[in-house]
Image (cartoon, rainbow, N blue to C red):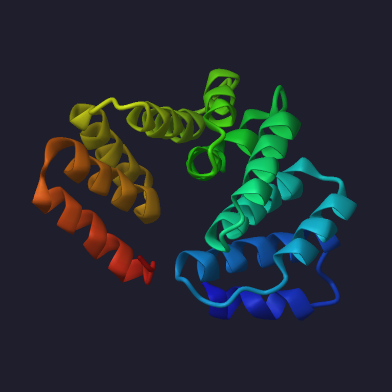
Length: 199
């Protein structure tokens, strides 16, 4: 993916919003792999200039995750809160796509109310929206102390069917935690290893 995507950012024919979008998703891959990142704040600034929610929403999610990874929970919390606010009552796909990642950041950054609002104020329309929001809701409930292995088992299957290996892996690992199932944990870790995801 990175090999195909990176040359596009130097193509003068590319619309500015598409260039930023490529930068967002390639940087997200680097972030998940624990690799050095480019200037995430520059990506966010350019996403703001584009003034398109389809670019700004994932840029905010990326910046929130990067801030958390850099050990700045205050900045991460602010960005997670901004994501929740700017995507509220807008086209569901812009909110749902990054809902799981932002919920995880909000919980880790000590602002569970942002994660709660993100789930409660979402209005999924498509199966894809529902899958992301159902997963974000399960993340929030687990943080509140709920052990729902049957939910995570179902989410693992749903993500497998959908084709999102990253979320399938995280669902498997959540199943492992909540059901004390080492095989599920190993299954999730193996998938993350295939993706080159660190940690």
